[in-house]
Image (cartoon, rainbow, N blue to C red; front, side, top):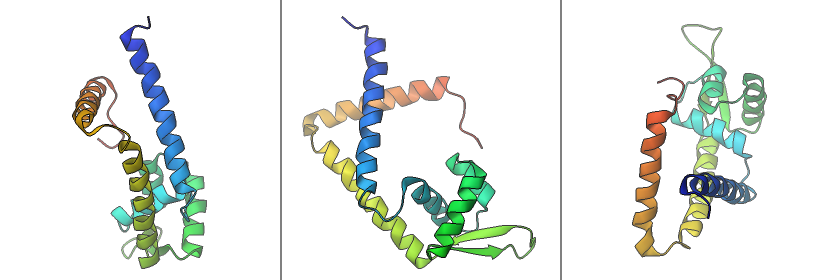
Length: 149
């Protein structure tokens, strides 16, 4: 019999892998790749961020962020504007098309989650939530704080 702590680790790994597959499948219908979506969502949430800010928040390499931001701008999803008080800084703003693309993609991802959770019996959803909250509390106590906190 597998010890419970080992089973939790193995189950978490399998859940993580399956969710990754599920989300990747949801993105197959999206116009944006997951990294571009993450960057555009970051800009949508915080208009005026810089490429460095986006790289830090998304934990992606700055050169990759910079190239993707350039492509998002060419595609009409982002605008790059010089900072009025420091022209060395370029601020990023989502266009209406970019905000719409984020909203559309979020619907696809939310739908994928909803479809997965539809397979969990209603009477067990509370158990899932309690287990996840317990695990999150344990991780919050043991894990290093996220960058920027």
